[in-house]
Image (tube, helix red, strand yellow):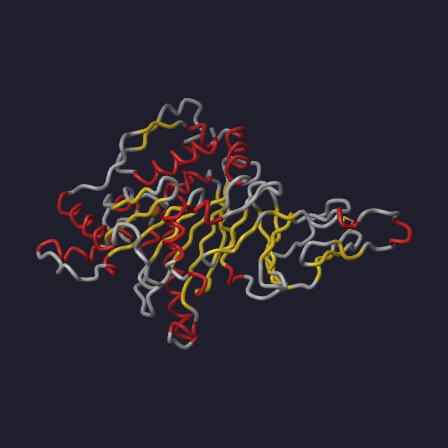
Length: 404
Ligand code: FES
Ligand SMILES: [Fe+2]
């Protein structure tokens, strides 16, 4: 959540929402009332949880299958593979995958494995190629997944080549991001998964016209849910980040919208305090005084800043409940749309990026690693999420629905 503490920058606004929901200013005014009253939006109860949820291999397996094997999650921004044959590889909870831009502009994903004897097909994290070619016996595949060539095929014997193409995973590009369901037998419908509210909200931001200016992954010895929880948490700010985020963001103040699966919330910046004495005019645009955060079930936090977005994703490790990979992306207007020259554009996003990295590495990660360490005690006892931890409650409520 410290992620909200970034450098204010200039540039065009990142799209205006079409506002089918509670108007943004109303929600901001609700947050302002909360600051006045020392209150916050509250979930309808407190809920207990246990340490095994973060350490048990069977629960972790269930999450990989019933969550990531069934519902779409974001794997990258489309701008990271802009041209045909651009690809990237990553470890999903169930499969190692290759995500590749097709000649027609669409995106496909495949299991990163040669169908001959199972060698890892593509070793690079990112690149562009006409063919995926296996290092073991040099079979090759088109970027659409079809098996192109079997070496020494006069001696290999007859096989139906159409049955030995790469295994495809359901993939869709929507709202600028590439989404994958991590099971070859599943289907994908991102709009249906987002639901009408969140689909319309994300559609209104025009994120397909933006670019991923910086992206990096971090392998952490922490369960993915502990990580996801920390980046929905408005309660820890002044305690965990007294000299960074807490200087800019109010602690324990949120105006939440629960869409029944996904959610979003307003967190007021301290600059809004000037309206505590003298309330803003009814038509005053308050958007620069807040950060708006979206929780996209199952594993993403999307922060909307005045002039850019930050996307945080948390993916379980394929076997170890005590590990995960976090990815962070800065999604911003292109150099051309920003009206800046590329030198200034780079300087600004570098500065933002360094601040984000410093808070992550120095403040959040150490705390979260020690949370995971704490969870390994055999007699950890019950723990509890409060009413004020509203979006965490939504995350755990929805995860329970998917896994039970
Ligand atoms: S394993 Fe790939 S060509 Fe043999
Ligand atoms: Fe934090």
